[in-house]
Image 1 (cartoon, rainbow, N blue to C red):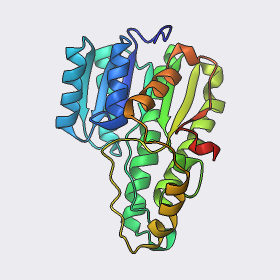
Image 2: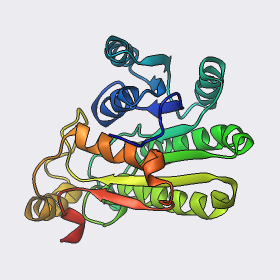
Image 3: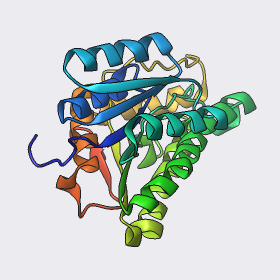
Length: 255
């Protein structure tokens, strides 16, 4: 990928122990960026860093729950300590709900999904913004979802969290475009990752959603295809792209 301008940049990728996050961290390393891998899965994160090191990349790990402000602070402090800067933030970490309809969504499911999928990216973005603003530039990329574009792709909690991400991206783009900050998102369609849905077969939500998904999706995408789109949005090749939500879904959003 030429002309990305990512060589030597300081990058934070969350949820990088596996799936889209792992593929994204490796792709940044291939572009010559310095990458901080953040994830709750310490063993998986270390494996990602080992692979990046074997490819000649520079990487460090912070392990912890990104919905915890102390962990968020550690991520940013470590990135600044090691890289001297945070040029790119990729808010990728997320969890799935149980495909529950609103009437069957329990408090614990709602609160955990919103905390991880929406509040954690808010906290981390707020923490890196002072560093980006001081530098006069920065690129923030979120992993949204088809569930952020439509109502029939997931349960109430996940759908609300990803619609929230879309709103956050657009607000960031408006608020900070005059200060050199860009905010964009990818909206993945079905992608081969390790995320699993623990849905009750008799629950109302899955009964409604499953036929809709099955009738409209195309092929299953790869984590690497999502990573390519994320790295593009983060790079100088997308210097005039701000506030965009890019479907990466084999045309599902067009159906």
